[in-house]
Image 1 (cartoon, rainbow, N blue to C red):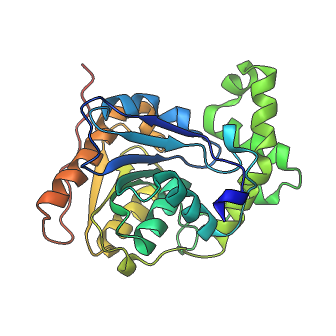
Image 2: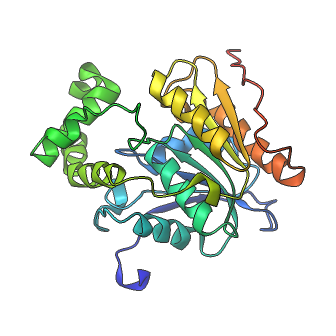
Image 3: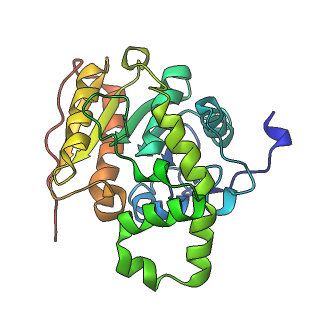
Length: 269
């Protein structure tokens, strides 16, 4: 099936000493993001092969159309890995992609770190989503970006960058509708070790959702990074990379189910 689809843009960092005997490290970005946002995190994990990709509809993968079928996202992830086992990190929407893949293919996603997956099916999740009330996809994308980076930064972006971001609006809306359709995974079906990360400065529903998810997973653990918010892979790449290494250590000596991670302290030095 993937032979008939436009290719995804994949970035792979492989150090000379990596001979492919250990799981690769896969990084999956969230909504309105791209693989390039993982540059600092990939550098912190560079002693082993790191793989990232622009998900369909974003950046250099815009020729592959947006989808409201979560199975398509999982197929994309499997295509990128090409049967290689991985410890996967997923940010926001990408966290839901990783969790779904782990539930369906634990032989491929053998461990995971998920950072604040959106779970709008939960009763305490906000229901006022301005993206879904906007009729123009470009306006929806711009509103999303302004909320994420602020008006001042958005206005300073080059005209071509703003245009390309607005062109990703249809993908954004498709992903928002996908999330409104209900959970694409069940915690009980995820039998691999998972660290659920959240930021100490994140909004209450992100923090509550992360704690609830960690408690519901058969092999879940909660990690809270002080000073971090929703974009921790950008602001705290060293600490988030440390969670990936923690899962790898956990794979060698699994702790009891439900054990909570020690709080990750930020080092500003």
